[in-house]
Length: 161
Image (cartoon, rainbow, N blue to C red; front, side):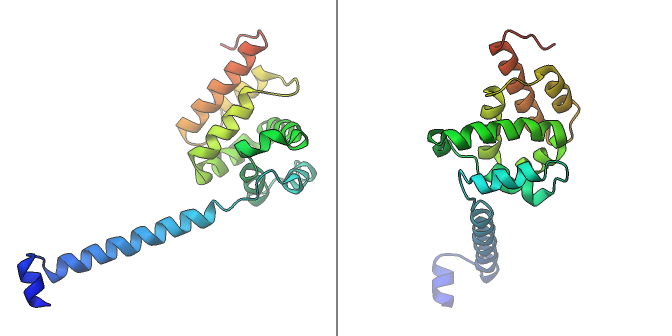
């Protein structure tokens, strides 16, 4: 073993450091993989959010946000209901939604932003914009949400300053 270390000019400390780094990387990737295990297009999660809009909890909002996926576009019932509930959630607790999106990651931010840009029902987009503008959360998430709501307003002929 010492001969190999000498030939490749690698110290034992360097090997130990690399092993620790590899273990840490594998642990992080494994945790990320498990945290993204979501039940896509699940109307039960929509019902759960709908029934708890007055008493929102982190897990309910996370389960709701996790159901979004591009494959759900073919499920009309899910698409319409989830879009409506998303706008209601923004009205009720945009801060909790932003907290969830921060944990779930950019893929989910993009999915939610697309939904905000394409409302199925009529909502007061100026009011929603102000709620998002005054929300807590990562600046990039808030900026993406504001941009999406502005675009939704433009699509309806409304100008948001």
